[in-house]
Amino acid sequence: MTTNATQIPSQTPRLLRIGDLARLTGKTVRAIHLYEELGLLQPASRTSGGFRLYEQGAVERVRWIGLFHGMGFSLQEMRELVHAWWDAGLGPEAMSHLRSLFKRKLEDTREAVRRSQHLESELAAGLSYLEACRVCAAPASTAKGCVGCQQDHGMEQAPALVAGLKSASPGRGPRRSHPVFVSVEEIQ
Amino acid sequence: MTTNATQIPSQTPRLLRIGDLARLTGKTVRAIHLYEELGLLQPASRTSGGFRLYEQGAVERVRWIGLFHGMGFSLQEMRELVHAWWDAGLGPEAMSHLRSLFKRKLEDTREAVRRSQHLESELAAGLSYLEACRVCAAPASTAKGCVGCQQDHGMEQAPALVAGLKSASPGRGPRRSHPVFVSVEEIQ
DNA sequence: TCGTACCCTTACGTTAACGTTAGATTCAAC
DNA sequence: GTTGAATCTAACGTTAACGTAAGGGTACGA
Image 1 (cartoon, rainbow over the protein chains, first blue to last red):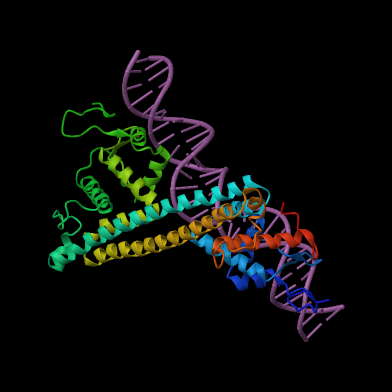
Image 2: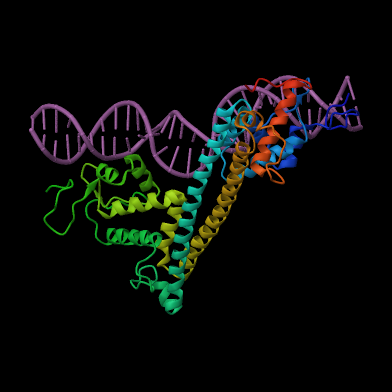
């Protein structure tokens, strides 16, 4: 009887070996091993020699893992979710637990969105600030004096990201010009 | 002459030892050492015995590091930015490089926002799906059959996150009931 | 001066998600 | 049967951002 990715003339669909699964999903054998260790995926069976054999559904499964991992779910979190799902059929408490997992992750995700959006606006403001230098004066002189220029570019105050960068400059500036005690140059 | 966090009766403000800086910023001494290694922060000087002494500005600096680190900037990325800022005074190319760093990070951040927002909507949909179970039937029977129930909760299709969880169940189900070859139970 | 908190440098440990390597076994085509 | 690709398990390595510990030196108030 042929067991390797061959059509079995009965009701059992063709099974995949791990390498097939890896190629079909763009993952490595190692990654699939890891998912199995974490309980996220199981082979349908094994050969008598110990080779893992997977059903076609495993392809979807690995893709699902990759999709949500890419969106921000750690493998551990997914593991919790999967286990909570399996347990949810056992009673109301388990179901409540599953829902609370969803709620917590949803809240965490909303917070992450806010943080990223905040950073986005900081970066956009900083970039505008830097672009403004190129606009407001002749290129040669602007580029030369831009980083150290004192004008506020039409803004009341430099964006926080740029302000922090600016504060780095004077700190380094005086240290180069006026050493206080031991001039720290070993960091180079 | 007193050098430890004492007012020097001249134009030099009181300097902080590393422990002071750590307490004022909520960071550890170790973290501050790391920032120094990465070139993000430097002590203003050292005692003859080697103790680091920081200016008040270092407090703002460490806070800035923490703020943007918390928003999604890796320390390495911040290092690149700081160095690009320092170099930007050297000419138009360096200035252009600084701007491109901003642009790239801005693009990455926008992508991160999109990913998180996508996950957020998936989680919200999944939660609605799960909440609908509690709504559509009596608690006792709903909780019992919820995970495996076949009705679509008024939705054409389960959200992708839930669909992936559902697909985990039948895979585990048959394996418990109808082992094909070697039943894999060692993952327990 | 003494005592104690503080600081120094060095170095190894932790975590998540794999990557990489090695030696042995299995599988399937020829 | 032979051969070479594929797979097995085991184990160590990588990265970022620190945490932890150790042994020795420093700073400063009492």
